[in-house]
Image (tube, rainbow over all chains, first blue to last red; front, side, top):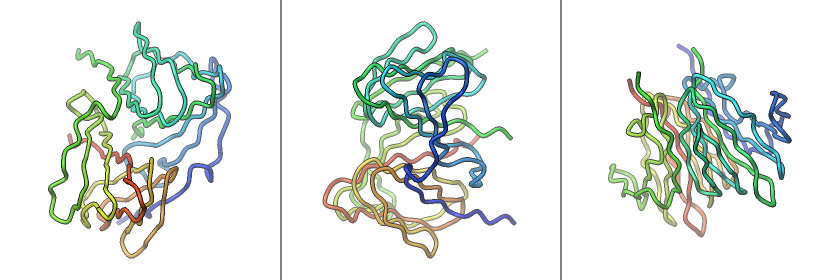
Length: 118
Length: 118
């Protein structure tokens, strides 16, 4: 029997790593909860995008569930565009091209959850 | 082939339902993203707990991944207690008794993700 341990951490105590994927601009990621913590099903990441920065325009066979914490963003999902800010929840289905662009005057910060591959 | 649709919603536009489970006190839940939206793996819920309110002390065979948005809470996980506030991420493993108590002077608001049963 594997006994999993709880984790309690402030996001500022988790390293912010530059996102080096092609197309990403001035974006960092913090892996707040992942399989390294024993999470069995999904991972919690925080993204920070500087003014005028963006996540890469890409697609992949897994979904995103996103919650906007601070800032203002334009989100492209397929051929749709949405303007979002603090308090918005987004479901981005698998296999749809998407990007998140900081269009505000401050750092954009959001949570993005993905399934853990098994 | 099932084509899933994206969802973009502000949390205030999602109904807040009173949590009526025994032991819950002055707590509401908003189902921001769930299987009803086509989410294949996990659900995003927002909880709002009034001053002195709490979620039930309970346990179940699935994990929680929680992010504190506003307010201050005491979180009991097994025999441990943690004080948390805005910016804290928590992983609560399966099968561990837990409760979240609002110990601040304002509404406690947090996201709580759970796996979708298949």
